[in-house]
Length: 125
Image (cartoon, rainbow, N blue to C red; front, side, top):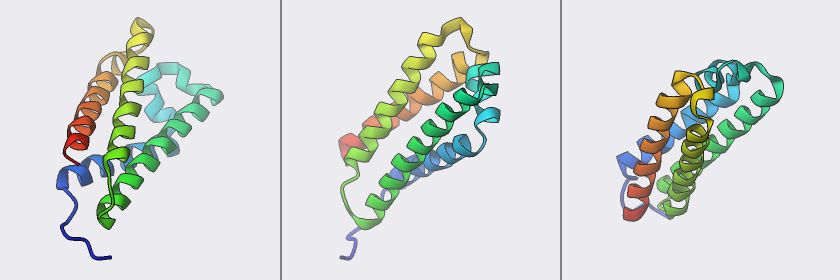
C-alpha cells in the first residue's frame, strides 16, 4: 500500500528522539542514570530498571516511526509516549530533593516537553 503523504517531520523528530534516548539509556544506564538518579545508578538492580525504561522508550518511538512511514495510525504510539513521559515526570517530582539537580530539573523539563509534544501531536494525528 502506497503512502499518500510523508510522515509529519514533528512526529518523525519526536519518535526518532525517543528511539535515540531509549537506546542510550538501554546501552549506558549507569552514565545516563547518574544524571537522573545520582549514585543510585551504580546499583545493578537500578541499572536493570533504567535499561527496561530505555527499551520501552525505544520501542514506543520505533512503533511510531514505523506506523508513520506505513501511513498507519500513530495516535496510540504518541499517546503511549506522552503517558510514559508523564510517569517519568511524576517519578522525578516525587523524588524531590533526594535527586541530583539533573533529576530535579533537567529530567522533569524534558519529560514535560515530551509529554506536551506527544499529546499535541496525538490530537492532530
